[in-house]
Image (cartoon, rainbow, N blue to C red; front, side, top):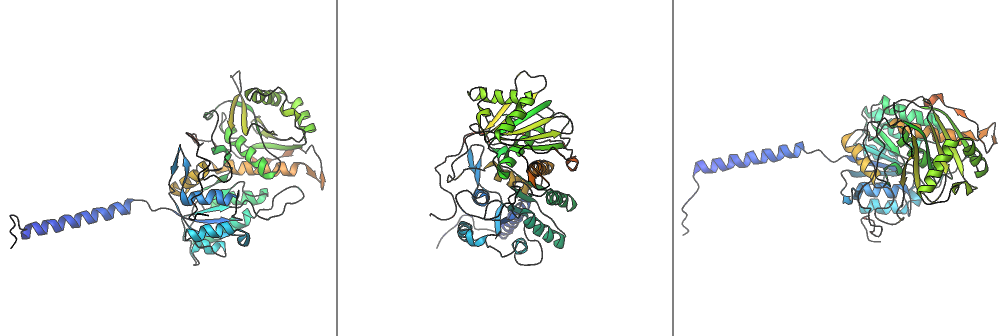
Length: 434
């Protein structure tokens, strides 16, 4: 026989039961208070290796990303996928199979799980890369608008909307891009997208303060085509929107193709030449080094408040912004350098997936979607500038842009990557070894 000095009484048993019930109720309440992880549907044009944006972005939404000097776990769940060019997207098929993410035949099915009602908490559109034609003017005819309007149709049918991220510019067509922006306002859902370069590591690690009296600005970077010029334009816009008085909209856009005509324009605009020389000096390059590039081009942007901006094609300085600021003797120069290799776990975009996650978790735009619309519009009109009546001219016409009389004030803080850079030799966490 086992003797006990403290056999439980009926009163103690009832007390223990009550305590257990209370603890269970508290645990259930805590679980209810914890926000559920947003469920994300991803819609891509093409998902392959080594450099498709779908692979760069979606894998990080699944497995986490490098942020503030360390790997961060993802805070969203990718639960469904649609891939437009599925047959050639073997990597995307393999990743989704390893992660148990179903690939649906239509965008509507991906958003509704094959049902009739919206069943996800956010949508990520990666309409970049794949076998798509370009037109005579150089527009890459990626079906971003087509995918976006399929998403909007589900929103309208379900009478409910969720946050949407659209990689790169909204569309190669201004009217379609404006429709996309307007739909986000009409249906009241947060919209984001754009280039990953504004969020990349900076040298020096600084942000321009809100209401800085910026007079003129340039961005030097690779701009050989529509995709390249958009990266540079989005970098320009992320800085100039912080000028005194806020964004006032774009008055005109002009494209100049070829080094000969580009450098003639620089000679006629001494402010641009001074900023170019300041960047050359910063990188220990000889004065006039950029002007030796016969393949350069320029995108000239005139803002409604008289501020001037220019993209100038150049190599050797990554993406570099230089701004002439009233009251300062020397320009402010900020560079985005050292793009990582293609196959590293943390190559290319990292901060961008962080802000995509923030969009989905907070349901708030990480920056004004008006910036995305303006960057898209500048790109669209740049591509149109060299063409008139079916004829090409290296010195494009100055395109008046009253459609871009868009005003807003940036209130965001610094959003770029900081801390130590990620290791380049860490393999992807794709869910399989090879």
